[in-house]
Length: 95
Image (cartoon, rainbow, N blue to C red; front, side):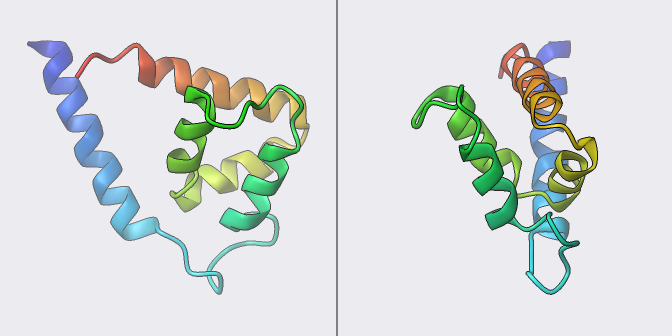
């Protein structure tokens, strides 16, 4: 019951963030546009087109604050580790 409630709340929060933080290129900080973040993500050797992580990232980076965090981390390897951690956390929550 608790896990289901958490999952529902998580989806609700994502929905609110998506509506309020979806991008307009005029609002993005340099290096934080969807195009810039995804381009850098694609440049990571371990990224496999069509994988679960790949699909997760394409949805995860719709939210501006997540792209800003990605850019703020700096080092590409650390960015990738952070994204994998976010993916694992999301994967551990059962709908």
